[in-house]
Amino acid sequence: MVQRMAKISLVLILFLWNYQGVAQDQFIDRNGVVIFEASEELFEEVKAINSTATAVYDAETNELASLTLVRAFEFKNSLMQEHFNESYAESDQFPKAIFRGALKNFDLVGLPSAGGEVQLEGTLDFHGKVKKIQTVVNAQLVNDVLSLLGNFTVSPADFDIEIPRIVRNQIAKEVQVKFDFKLKRK
Image (cartoon, rainbow, N blue to C red):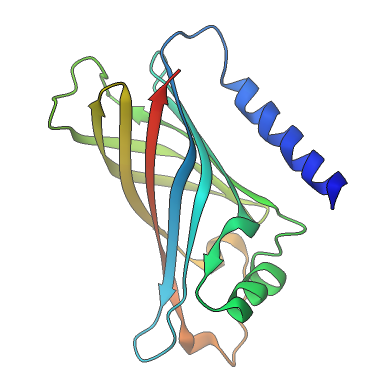
């Protein structure tokens, strides 16, 4: 377990180091929130929250990267959490979800105080598969904290996750993913 934690820490340090560069205008959030929901009406809620995602934004390049440890997703039902980690996400084999992308045509300096919408494009690497993501995020800068709030939709099939027939009707074919990053200027 200690060796696994050391390996995860090393991966996180290397991940952040790749985005350190020489840029002076970087923002980071080590407690970002990522929520996914795959609930179907009439069945038990399939929803998990992770409040430990790390996100880094480089204002010079408009690049945004996020790392989320899969085991850190918390469900209301502990059995559901166990099944998610062991049977679906296979989090021992695929311990992290990584997003890499960029805010398109975004000017941090010109961002209105009320915030605005901006296009986010990138890739999500999860369960050993990579999927292109395009979405619109709400961006707001207040007191050197850049707030990025957004959502997108994926499906288990995008990541070669098979849902057993016995529970197939209880899990949505489209999974809603929401994120809320409060990135502080470094």
